[in-house]
Length: 621
Ligand code: PLP
Image 1 (tube, rainbow, N blue to C red):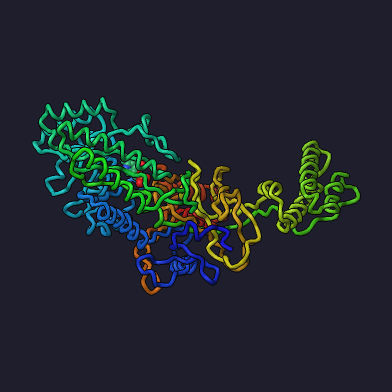
Image 2 (cartoon, rainbow, N blue to C red; image 1 turned 30 degrees about the vertical axis):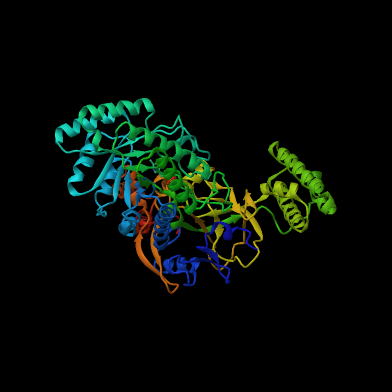
């Protein structure tokens, strides 16, 4: 049984194999056999690339870019829309060179462009050779330097659109134009009042922080007209939001964007492009419904709704169909990356046996142990209550000094054995919903080799859900339930919400850890936003990153390897010079030798250990 719901969220790309391992299907070669992810990981481990590692699948990136573009092209054809589609990828969603380079490569034939929200991102965009018709859309707050570079880049043939976010920015554009004598290509960012639902609802509606209201918009038009630059205004940008759960919100917001577009045209603005920003969501849970981590539509439906809504509004206003632009980020990159890590050890929350109660033990230990004699299906809740009560009483006695450490340890073990018996009884019962829910508090803790703050920051910060599953043994029934704890020393560094076939659960079904081989877990759809939002908590740095291509014959090609941060690198991020650290440590060692507290013959060993650490991976090796 597919308890993890892989068939719901796996998009036919992530599939269980007959041998119980997770396989990756190549969407560009549907007849190719799926390749086992654990076998990819062990192959990479053999090459010296260790977990935790981020695995990027280039074929998935290519597939998503083609899917979005072909969805718009099909919708345009089916609707009789006379404008075109030009996607741009928002660099902020994943700025890594390996990702952007590939997006540009795969997007070349599709006139796919880039969106830059800052000066560094514009610098990245301008370092790529884009196709003749591709756009570079510049959003965000811009100073004269940003505007100068964007304007001058037109001389190299780039279609760089400066999207005005405020009347003040219009002043700067006019001033730069007067200095350079080069006409800019302009856009205006219009704030939509329709608020979408979902986790990112604040990024839409009246109180969203970007874009202009009607009053500011009119001020900008007047300024541009006065400066003789109104004819440069070609694009209206109206960002729909992010991870929009409900496709009807897309229709509503696009309808509102069209109202602005038709009004601006009536004002004599020669707009040719309507940019609807981001918002195309990912169905993280596979539920196919409008909720925070799921969406009630497909890419094809999203494209069809946009094209139809715009066609209808423009026809009604008797305006030519504009070129449609979207800035999908999450939908392009999320699927292509997965995080793989190993479980280091487990803290089990039950025990197979219970010790005998000693004659001198406090009578509450005997009371606790006696629960085992009346543990039956109809009294399971009563037993749970009694066990919690006696354990709390015993802890209070320990705190006050009435029972010693050994008695307390025996009591804990009796309690854990009771948990084991209750868990196995509940598993065999047909209706134990209430107790099952309480047993979630008795889930094991699996200690895993990753940092939540570095690799999954949205899970920590905004309760983002990603599918998380064991990568092997899926042909065996998981015999334990666990929450996951990372290796930072922070109690927030844990995951206790998991997507399962029948809903979100506070614990993950897992297997008892095998003695003889690693137990890998995979976190899926982590390609959007996570890599650069991640931070250096406890100085755990970037993980190893590999970019792979899935071949048509069911093998893989290692396209690129980016080694994770070494300790020396993360030290330099917090302004330590690693050489100074080595020198300081050496002085301490030599001082200890002079004082006679360290043998001179140990110097090589201790300095070697320090140097090995400083050159090594920040994660558990
Ligand atoms: N464009 C703009 C202006 C944005 O602010 C964002 C993100 O919120 C995006 C595009 C990307 O959105 P998404 O990742 O939902 O596609």
